[in-house]
Amino acid sequence: MKKEDLISFMKEIAAELQRRGNLGTAHVYRSSLNAIRTFLGSDKMLFRQLTPEWLKRFENSLRERGCSWNTVSTYLRTLRAVYNRAVTLRKATYVPHLFRSVYTGTR
Image 1 (tube, rainbow, N blue to C red):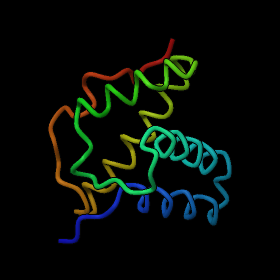
Image 2: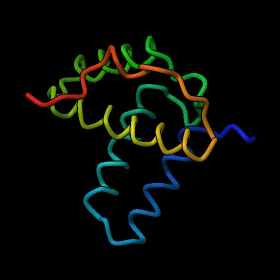
Image 3: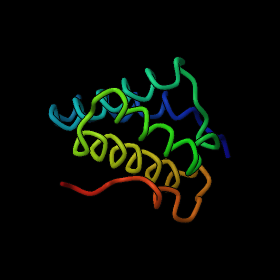
């Protein structure tokens, strides 16, 4: 089972959404991806690097940059959807309650 780079996988999903005509959703995926890349300072991240601690640091970074709670939630929910899809396709290992400590609601 090949473990895949999160950034590459997210780019593929955004491109697929664009091709299918889901332009708004594709835009959200690209915006989320850009926020992750800005936080990382890199275009590489393996799914195994996705930890509750990393997610909390990412959430805090978004808030420090002035993102609203709804934007933070949107980016984290998008990342969770990418992660869940990767788990289903066996590109990532399932980690129970991975997103429990970060905000994914609405305010």
